[in-house]
Length: 415
Image (cartoon, rainbow, N blue to C red; front, side):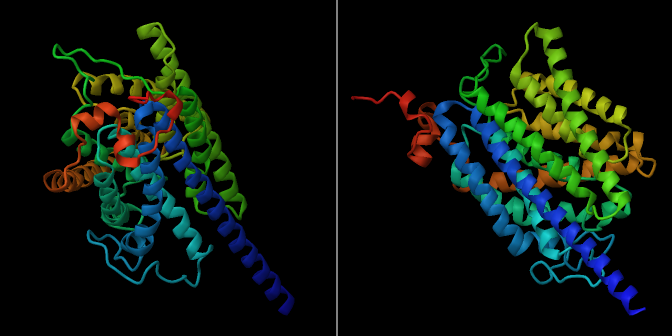
């Protein structure tokens, strides 16, 4: 009997260790997505704004880790009432549950990299004309309060969870939330100088480094296996291990089908293979499948990616036609594809309903867009959110950072 007890304890501890290790590795993969966002955005902006966009991406990750530790995780998860609207406020990250199957700290680490991802969506959309310090102040507010509150409503067992809203890894909670906050900032900022002509024409502003943008997309694709795979929350038994394997394959398929779909659409519409659209097609597939990569069949996951890849191309063009300037297509990739991903869940998941999914999508958008618009508005009337016309023309690197990313390409005046 004693031997059986020891064996049971050993198996339980091994399961605990495996799940904890899986959480940590998955979190590390998602953390690496911060590098992907940085490289993607650095490649899609002009050379004169590269250092500043890299600074934003690096510092926003640090800010997210600080604010989510001190405030955000507490709001989202600690001592909250199930089915509620308002979160409570306990002690830091709470305490380890007696029946937990993984270490509490591993859960915090896995969650903190998600909030950084949501904020990373914002940086690309407002690139090349937003003040650095206004952006960083907004990052504090989003990661400390705005994201944790809407995250609690579903993942923290709040009212959206009680209503049946389903979002496996965050098509809505992370990606659409970040895009909603970004859209509010973009509308208050206005477009970059020269982006739109007086007669409605759209003037392309090309990025400075497509190899870097491509590398960033590959990094994001790689990190997404931790993003979606880790959201299974366990791996130490046959059922969960099999589910993780399916999540990996579905995630990969959606990205691949999304890239191919965007390529075909570009060829059919413009007769060219637009690399930036293909990259965004892959990302759109990834965002869309994130709402539920566990339920769809392998074929269905590909179809979701296929639709998302085509959808994002038309969305990017559509935003340009109504003069909403998004340098990296973040609102389309994370917002439109995120909404599509949320709403398609009931097609393959019998436990989800279109009504509950719509409620979740509307709630997330209304909260993140509305509160972000208020915060951006306060920043605009106090410290200002847009750089001067001269600073925008010369590039924000010189004014915000004092360091050029590509100094050999900069013409030195009066040299």
